Length: 595
Image (cartoon, rainbow, N blue to C red; front, side):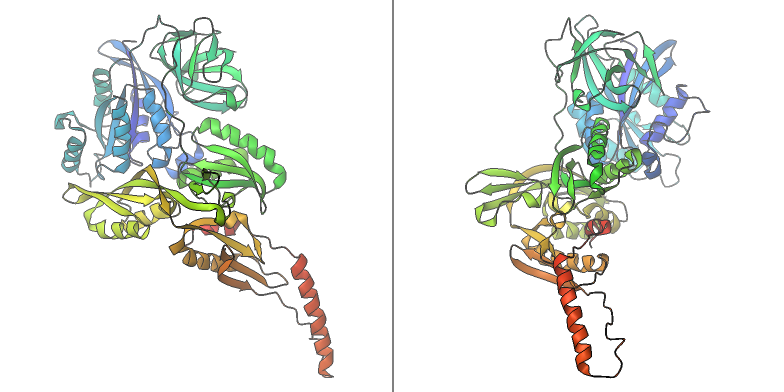
C-alpha cells in the first residue's frame, strides 16, 4: 500500500486530459510505441471522432522512482458538464487529482466545478499548465488565475505539454511525492467500492472496484451488499491496457471482478463488495443516485424491435449509470421508453451509441424537463411528459425547475451573453471579474429554456470562448401551458410540449410552418394546427396533390365538367375521413433545431 497512488485527471473539455494520459502511459512503459495512438484510453470510435471523453477509464501503471517500484492507478475523466456524474464516481475512488488547465484558454467553468467536486472529497490537487508548446500560450496570466483559484504557490504549478511530453516526468514525480498513499487495513473485513461496470459478450458483466479495506483472492465467495447477491470471484485482476488477472488484490488497489453475472440489475455502481463469511459491518458511503435533467421518449422505428431496444438500453445503462429509462406508450409511435438524460449532448451520444453499438433505428421525441403539478385533489404530482398533464380544471399551478448557471466569458462578449440569458427568462444574481478581461456571471434560469439550443447560441455569440456550467437549484411557479400539434384535428402526442405562455404563440406558429415543409403532400388537404386547450393559435394547410379530371373534356356542356368535379370532391371527402398522415422522422428532429 505504501507504494500505491490512486489519482484522476480533471479539467474543462478540450484542455488535453487524454493527451497527457497518453504521455503518462508512454513514459511508464505501460504501452509500447507500436500500440500507441492518440487518445489511447478513449476506446469508442465516437470519442475519437468528436475528440471528447464520454466514459472515465481506469488503467494501472508501474513506475520506478529512486530505486523503488510504484503502482499508479490513473482514472481519466470526461470534461463536459453532461458527464459530471462520471467525474464524481472517479473522484470517489482516488486520493489525488491532476488539475489540468489549458495555457491558451485559462480557467473555464467546468475546471471550477470539477475542482469543487475534488475539494469536497479532500483530494490532493496538483495543478498542471498544459499546451505550453503553443505560440499563443499565456503562462503568466493563467498562473495568476490558478493561484487565485486554489491558493497554491506559483512554483507548485507544473508547466507541461501533452503533445511533446515536456514536464510529464516532473508530473509523475509530484504524483509520487504529494499524493498520499491509500489508507486502509488489509487485515479488516473486505470492503470494496464499485465505481464502474461494462458488459462483455463472452464474460458477462465486469465490475470495476477500488478496495478500501481487506483482501480479495481468486475464487473467494463474495456478496454485493445493496443487491444482496452472492457470487464466486472467478477472475480478479488489475486494469492494464488489457485486463491482467491476479491471484489476490489488497486495500488501496483498483481492479476488476468477473463472476459470470448476466443481469444488469445485479450490479449497481456505488455498491459495496464484501465476503459472505466475514462481511464488513457498514457499507461505503458512495455517491447519490443521479438526477436526470432532460427527458425524452425513445421509440423503435419498427414496433417489432421493442424487446431488442429494451435489451440494448439495459446494456447501455451498465456502461452509463446516469441513463434512466422506464417503459411508456404513445398513440403516434407505439411502445417505447421515457428516458432521463443529464443534458442534450448526453442524449445525442446515447442515440448515436444505440445506432452504432446495437444497430437500433430509433425516433426521439421533443426533449423536456420534469415539472411539479400542484392539483386541487391529488396534491403534488411529477410530470415528465406533456401527455401526463391532468385536465386544466384540476390544476392549481405548475412549478418548473430552475438552475443556477455560471458563465465565464471574455468581458467584450458580456453584453450579448446577458441579452441571451434575459431572453431565456434569466435573472442575474452575480457578476465577478476574475481578471481584467474575464468575467464570471451567475444567472438563475428555468431549465426548460436551456434544454434546446442555449449552449449552441452561447458558443456562437462568444466565438467559442464562453464556458457554461449549471446545477439545479429549486422549483418555482410558472405560467406554463400545454401546446398541442394537431394534424387533421388529431393530436400528435409526440410533438406536444409544455411551454411558457409568452412563447407559445411564436413557437406554435414556427412549428406549423416547419411541419408544412416536412410532411409530404397527400391527395387531400392536411390542416396543421397548434392549439392551447381548445383554442387554435396557429394554422397552416398542406394543399392536396390535384389531378386535372376535366382534362379529357374538351368543348361540350359545362355540366359534364361539373359532374366530374363533384365526383372527385366526394372521393376527396371520403379519403380525408379514412386517410392518415405519416409524420416523418425529420419532423421530430426539426423541432430541436427550430430557430
